[in-house]
Length: 183
Image (tube, rainbow, N blue to C red; front, side, top):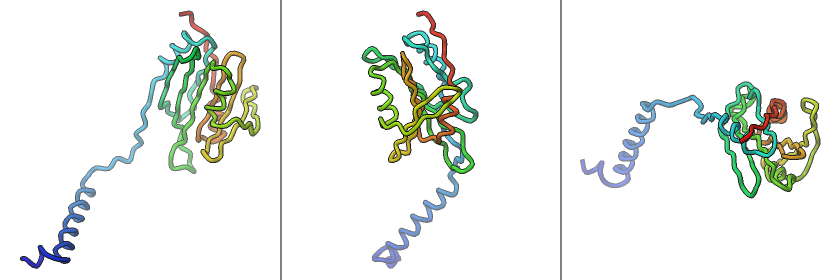
């Protein structure tokens, strides 16, 4: 019995017993194969934005099919009202995972600084027409981030993320302007 508890053979036997135990544990532990994405209801932030923002708010109506709203945050800082709404896009057949997209809007001044910060670049790489409206296209290759920017007289709207141009265009195309609500 002493032979198996000392030296290299004892160490090897102990390691095999431990690895066998871990293997059995992994085999009997249930594995979840489903996505676990947080889903948020952003309707409260929309209502607050319609009441508090000095500009007319843009919301996706309807949210693109298969997209999941994962975050919503409204802030009032330094006189600016900002709303950021994050999404996990629909699964694409060629991709194993979902991409991410965000709608950001604010009356922050200067507007160009807000747009540059949300897009992570100030370089305009082109423009695109979506529902008769021109959006600036911006690309940050090293972050795999694409952005659509719309500078309005009273606010800035940015649609950005790792989503493909078609997906970002679908989100931008779904945006509807909401009427301001009196406080």
